[in-house]
Length: 193
Image 1 (cartoon, helix red, strand yellow):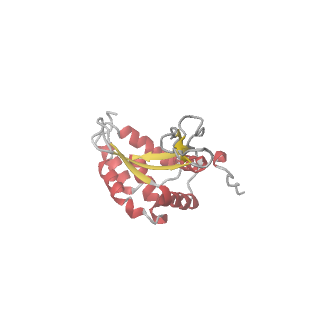
Image 2 (tube, one colour; image 1 turned 135 degrees about the vertical axis):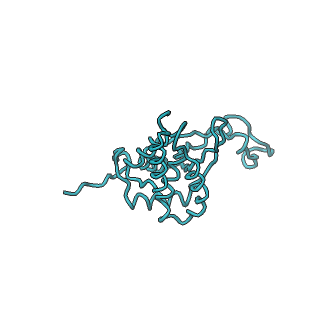
Image 3 (tube, helix red, strand yellow; image 1 turned 90 degrees about the horizontal axis):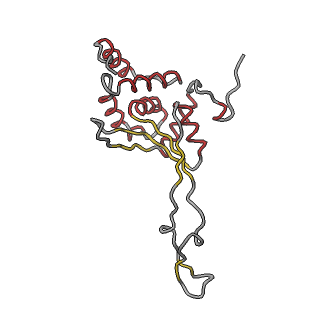
């Protein structure tokens, strides 16, 4: 008996397994509008690498979130009155600039953002690599993440939880990550989380 594929992202459960077509779709989205951002935090020893995507069409961010077990983040842009002021030359006798809420009573559209950070970004990008045209643009960040993720000590619990979440969704965890996590467990270095 075959099961019917979900027609909408909202029909997908959290335990949905990532398929090759999901990876190809996601790779196309990241190829077109993916962005790597580096966040500096004084509490961290290394910059936080974030893979992110933003769109006015929230369905895309929702599907990316369903595939990675994350939550989409809607953001309303602030009013842009000062930016969009235009001189009035058509319906007023003298050219001037309308100022105030009555002049531009609309807001910028809400943008929905999807993002994964650190080891999750590396796992996602490595799984998408065979389908991406722009993977080389991300290779340095992936190497940086793989060389610096917390296998022991502070932060290693979050790494293990992230890897478990992605594995449950069908993402392939790179062998280098598995080996490093296994070595850390053998050395007992993850006991202090």
